[in-house]
Image (cartoon, rainbow over all chains, first blue to last red; front, side, top):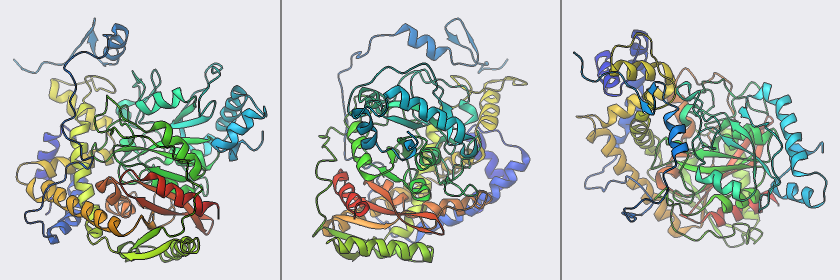
Length: 99
Length: 465
C-alpha cells in the first residue's frame, strides 16, 4: 500500500517525530517499498490462527507488593540530575496547557 | 606478551596461573593496543583507561572484555550509538554486568553498534561507522559490529553483544568469530536498552566455542528484575562439550539454500555440513515451510515494539533536548526526537507506529503475530525429528561500506536466516567455517529451547576436528 506524504505526516505526528519536507518525501517512498514487501504476508492462510506475542511460555510472574530495595537518595539525585531542564530536585517541562 | 591478540579466556587464565603476566599488566597491554589500533577500526566508542583495577577473583578473574554500548555499566556513559543519549550516564549495572563483575571480568570499554541496535552493518552509528578487521573497505556486520570487530582484531579477549534479529550472529559471521544468541529467557535483559522486548537477548562474541560456553554459564539465570529470565538451572556448559557428536541428528532446512543465498557461500556451508556428517552426525534434509515469511513478520513485530519502547526518549527525562525556539511540550518532543534520533531509527518508529495504528493493526501487527505462531510451529515440528538445525548465518560475506545504505529493504534482507530464530526464541550460534577471498563465512547452528549445550558441543567438535 503506497504511503502518501499525508500518511507520513499523520504517522510522524502520532510518533512525535519532527520531519523536514525532504524527509517526508524520502520516508513516503521508502515506507511504501517496505510495506509492499510486507504484503507478502497476505499469502499466508492464518484463519483462526492464534497470536504469538512472546515465546517464553511464562505467565503472570508475581511478587509481593512491597519494597525490595531501600530508597537510595544518591541514586535518585543521579537520575534526576540527567534531566536537561530542572529546578532543585524537580524535572522541568514546558507547559502542557496553553493560554 | 606480543601474542595477546590471540588470547582466549582459557589461555588468559593459564597465563595468570603461570605468572606470565599480572591482571593489571594484561589490562595495560590491551589498553595500549586499543589506543594504537582503534583509530582505524572505530570498534570502541569509550575506553576505560582509569586507575589500576583491583585484583579480581572468580571464574573470569582478570579476563578483559568489551561491552556493546547498549548495556549499562554504572557511572559510565552509555549511548546506544545515538545522539539522543550522547551524554547519558548509566545509573546502575545491567544484570549481565553485575554477573561478570562477580566472576572477576575486567572491562576495557564500550563498543560501537547500529543506533539502538537497528541495522545490519554498524553504519547507523551517530559516532561513525566501524570497519571489518579482515578488510577495511567492508562492514563488520551489525548491530554488534564493534564487539565483533574488537574480538576479531584481538582488541579484547571476549565481548558481549545483543541479538534482536541476528545482531550477534551476523557480525560474528562477517568478522570470523563465534557469536552465540541464547534462548529467549536464558539471560536477563535488565540494563540492556530495550529495542524489541519479545526478541532481544544478550549474547556473547568470543574467539572459540569453549569461551562462549564459559561466558554463557556466567551471565545466565533468573533475575527478579526481568520476569522473562526463566527460573531454570544453569548447567556447566563446558562439561560435555568434548563429547562426540556421533549419532546426533542434524537437520538441513531446504528453504535456507534457495534463491538469495550466494553460490560461493552455499558451497562453503555444504562442505561444513559434510564435515559434520564425517564426524558421525546423521544429516537429514528438513523443511521449515514458513521461512520465506519470517523477514516480513519480523520487521513488523520488531518495528512495532520499537515504536513503543523508544517513546521514552522524549528530551525531558534524560539525554539530548532541543531548547531553542520551542514553544510547548509537543515542540520539545518532536524537535528533540527529530534531531536526536537517526534516520533508520525514525524509519522503524514510523513503520511500527503505522503497523499498530487504527485501520492497519489487523493487516500488519496481528497478521505478523499469527505468522510468528506458524514459524515457531515449524521449529517445534522440526525438533521432533532432529537435535540441531544447521545452515548459513548470512546470505553473503561482509559487503562493502556504503553498499546497502541507500536501500533499507536490501539491508533488511541481510537478516533473512537469523530473524526466524528470534521469532521462535530458540538459541543459535554462528561459528567460522571457511573463507571466500579472505572473507570469513559463518555456519549457523540452531538448537532446541534451552539446549545451548548441544549446539555448543557441535560447534566445539567442528572447530577442533
